[in-house]
Amino acid sequence: MKFKVVRLCKADALSIVPQEVVRFDLEASSGILREEGYDIEDSGIMIVARKGRTDITIYRNGRMMIHPATEKERAREIATELYSILGPATG
Image (cartoon, rainbow, N blue to C red; front, side):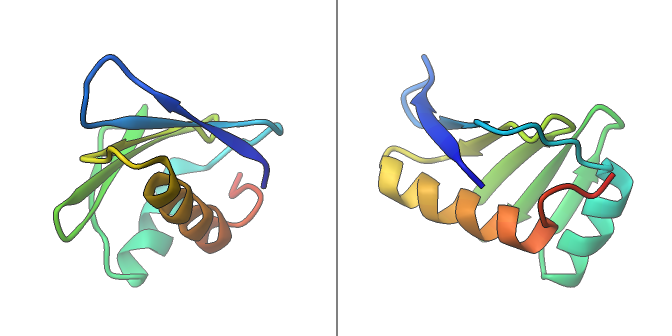
């Protein structure tokens, strides 16, 4: 999965923007991430996956926001892990 890491106005968050068309089924993604040990909040339009002290907001279009994150390389590692867990698209 190709993506870029973008710094947001918020100093301790980074956004992950897919460079390919992605469409996640958030309900299915929630189940997959729960099985991988993430705590999940599902609002219907996005899910927040928590593991340790990191929150990852995941949108249907594959975009993610990682908080707290200040290092692009760390955000890249988290995004790569999540995209590999969720596959190219789950819906």
